[in-house]
Image 1 (cartoon, rainbow, N blue to C red):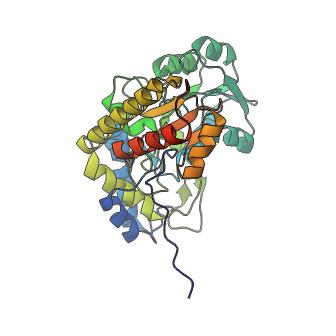
Image 2 (cartoon, rainbow, N blue to C red; image 1 turned 30 degrees about the horizontal axis):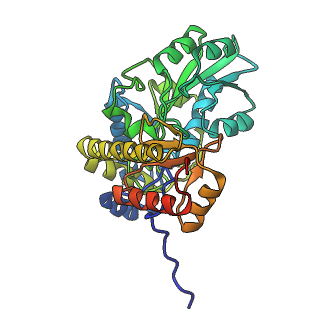
Image 3 (cartoon, rainbow, N blue to C red; image 1 turned 90 degrees about the vertical axis):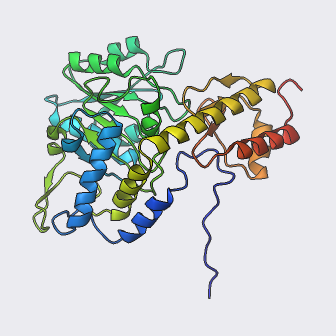
Amino acid sequence: MPQQATPQSFDHVLSSMCTEPHPAARDAAERFLASNPGDPATYETVSELESRAVELLATVAEHPDPGDAAGYVTSGGTEANVQAVRAARNRTESSDPNVVVPESGHFSFTKAAELLDVELRTVPLDGDFRANLDATAAAIDEDTALVVGVAGTTEYGRVDPIPELCELAHQADAYCHVDAAWGGFLLPFTDHAWSFGDAPIDSLTVDPHKFGQAPAPAGGLLAREQATLDALAIETPYLETRSQATLTGTRSGAGVAGAVAAMEALWPEGYRKAADRAMANAEWLAAALSDRGYAVVDPDLPLVAAQLPEETFTALRETGWKISRTASDELRVVCMPHVTREMLQAFVRDLDRVGGSEDA
């Protein structure tokens, strides 16, 4: 009999934006593995749970009416971002629509543009790795269907100027989407303007399976108004439910149930404590790297980027550390809930052993 495979431990994972699920979320996910939220008239219990998930996500994102918010639990940020582009394309009057995205935008927007046959206009960042407003304004025209802002970029953890981007979009009769897939469960405990409560944004991505500590896959798409979801709906005549706005159709109820369980267990104080702990860890690591002579991008959210020689990076990978690089080849460390101070101390000890300091 073949040996049963064992999941990889998180004890050396510093590059991922996923983390260990909360125990209650793990249990709930297992109970709803076989339920299909894609046919809510048949699977009524998981449909009710999805409504609760949307309400909780809308609460996190400061939607003006969480109990009546439009949205659904996606497979992740990629699906939510693709759907935001699709909704904007379907609602625009342009026959040749474009989408304006900062260079820090997730690669899912490239996928969306290719799949949906819309032009992707990528604009440069400012000196703090945020969307450049002048460049964004210059890229927008009468065919712009959607302007995207990122709230918690995947490379540097930066938050774009969301209210200003939203104003630019609406001045051009375009829609505004915020990708807060990673940042959404961190930003409520900061002073950043990013949410439905901070600006009249039209849609937002937020992933419970990232800092929300739900099992993967569990993403989230939220909309200010039902018309965004209506623009995604197609007929499903052979199901009990006669229309569907989701992209994947059949989905496991595990993501829905796990997301609800995690949010009910942790919102808000559990997430606040996790966010504070993660930020303290990021600041500690940034200081440790800076003390050793490495150039560090000051963390704004709990993500650390630093210039590290290729040979040192490779040696750390060979030691077993799961680390990644930004597009500009900096070391990138994401301080997720599973990342402890002890892990980071062990990482720095290995760094000292294999690479020493940049000044050495």
